[in-house]
Amino acid sequence: MMRIHIVGPPASGKTTLAQRLATNLKIPFYELDYIAWQEGFPKTERSLEDRLKDIRSIAAQPVWVTEGIFLIWTDELLRKATYIVWLDMPLRLVLKRIIIRRLRWSLTGMHVPSSFLKQLQLLKYIGLYYFGTGHLDTRIFTANHLITYKNKLIHCLQSSEVEGFFKSIPIQEQGNKDEDNC
Image (tube, rainbow, N blue to C red; front, side, top):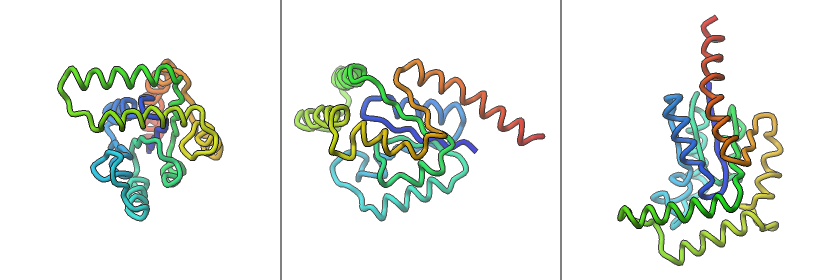
């Protein structure tokens, strides 16, 4: 049974890692933005009841990969996860990825899911995540919240650590399958 929950700020690599793991392990992948928001983008928040119902449904499955920045209403995923991966990337890397992402969207003509004002709000949110102290969606809050799960927490501070985790999972999963066959 492989259940992996990935948490981190925007542009930390959550979706990319989750998709790679899900493809490699051939297990379902869930983006929590689609559980948190109507249509997956921060416009209209879904009710807590609906979010928790979906979380319970995912958590009950034997295998999955989930990703999102959300903590408060995702504790069931955190409890059931085999691994919790915190992508705690440096601010400079996150900002670089945001700029590259926006440029790519512009150059390819992809629809950017938010206005310029929303992009400024995203930058403010990231600033609060890294430097804020009194808010739920901060790096400090994340660290304190994840202490409860330290026995299964993989805290990645750089891309090489993320890659090391990714490469170790198929080996661990194969070892689990071999034990099951004994």
